[in-house]
Image (cartoon, rainbow, N blue to C red; front, top):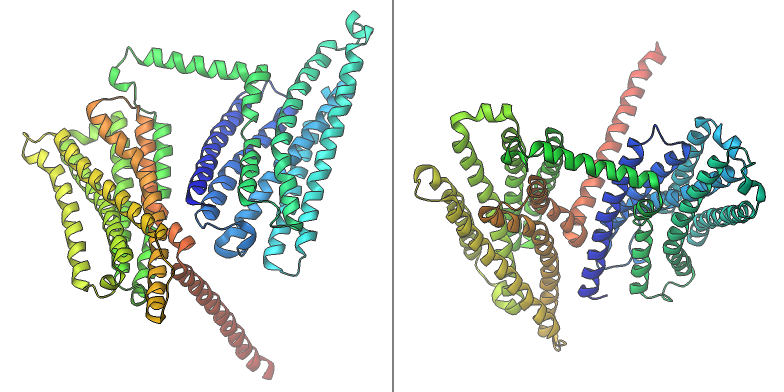
Length: 610
C-alpha cells in the first residue's frame, strides 16, 4: 500500500489503542471499586477487561508500528525477526483469551438463568478455577505459535487450524448458550407463574435476566466485529493473494474495535456501571468545589500520586533512551566505514537524545515534583530561580539541538538525492562544520534561557518566542526537504548504460536511507509537536491543566526514545549488528560452558586416580 494508506491505518490503530486502554482501564477500576456489591460474574468481566487492555497495549502499538513502518505484511516476514514472533504470540494470547472469556460468560449466564438458586449459592472458588482455566488455555494456544517460530517442522496449516478450531468451538459455545437463554426468556415471559409472583426469588431471576441481556449485547457486538478477521485470517492460510492487503487491515481495525466497545455497552446497559461513573464524576466535582475556594493556584496542581506515576514513566523512558542511544552510538561508530559521513550526523543525533535521557527526567521529574509539594517549595527557597533557569537552559539545549540535527539530516538527504555525484565527493570538513554549527545554535538557544537571571530586562516570553521561531524554521526545513525527496521519487527515470546503472544503484541506496530518515523525522515530530504547541500556548494563556503539560512532556521524551527502534526495523546495518552481538553472546556462553566442563573433568581425573 502507499504511504497515505499506511498513515491512515496507523492513525486508526493508534486511536483505537488509546480508546481501548483508557476504556478498559476505567472498566477495571469501576468493577474493582464496586466489588463488595458485585458477585462472581463481575470478576469474569474484570478479566475480560484485562484481556482487552492487553490487546490495545500489544496488538495495536506493537503490530502497527512494527509492520506498517516496515511496509511489509506479516506473512512475508520472518516470524522470529526482531522479536516479531514473540509479539505475535502475545497478541494471539490476548485475543484468544478474550474470546474464551466471552464463552465463559455465556456459560455462566446459562447456569444463572436455568439454575438461579444453585447460582446464588455457588462458591467463589468455582469462578476462580474457571478464570485460571481460561488463562491457561490462552497461554497454551499462544505457546503453539512459539513452537511454529522455533521449530519450522510444524505445519503452517495444522498450526492455524488448531488455533482457529479452538476459537470456533468457543463461538459455538457462545451461540448455543445464548440460544438457550433466549428460549428461557420466552418461557419466562409467557409463564403465568412469574406474573402472579409464585416463583421463589422472582427478583433474583429478573435481575439475572437483565444482566444476561446486557452480556448478550456485549457478546453479539464483539462477535460481529471479530468474525470478519476470523474468516479472513483463515482464508489467507489457504490462499494468500485472494484477499488484498487493505482488506486485511480493515478487518484488523474491526478486530481491534472488538476490544473497544465493551465499556460503551456497559455505560448504556449496566446500571451498576452507570451508577459508579456518576459517583466518580460527583466526587470529582465535589473535590473541585472544595479545592477552588482554598487557592486558585491549586486548581491545576496534581496530587503526589499522579506526580509519582509521571516520574515513574520518565524514569522508564530515561532508561530506554540511555540504553538505546548508547547502543546506537556504539553501532554507528563501529560501522562508520560502511555508512561514511552520514553516520556522523546520526551519532550526534544519538548524543543529543542521550543528553535528553540523562537530563530531562531529572528536570521534569524531580524539580517539578518538588514544586508541587509544600515540602519541595520550602526546600527551594532562594535557589528556585537559579535551578529553574539552569534546568531550562539544559532542556532547551538538548531538545533544540536534537531538532536541529533532524533538519540537518533532511538537508543532507536532499543533497544526496538531487546531486548524488557531488554528494559522493563532498568533503568531510563540510560535515564537521555543519555539526559544529548545529551545536553552536543549540548552545545559543540554551544560553538565551540564562539571560533572564543576569539581565532582568530580558523576559522569559521573549526567549520562548525566539526559541520557538528557531524550532519552527527547522520544522519547515524538514517538511520542505522530504517533500522535495518525494517529488524526486516520483520523477525517477529508468537507467540505461553501465555507468548510469552504477550511479542508479547508488541513488537507490541513498533513497532507501532517505526513507529511513524520513520515518525517523516523522516519528520524532509526531512526539515533539504536542509539547511544542503546549509550551508556546502556556506562555500566553494558562489554558492547560498540569496533567496535559506532563503528558506532552512524556511524549517529548518518547521523541528521543523512538529512534533506536526505527533503526532496528528499517536499517539492515543496525539489524546485522544486533544479530552479531547476539551470536557473539551465544558463542561466549558456549565457550564458558565448555571451559567449565573441561575444568570439571580435569578436577575429576586426579580424584579417580586416587
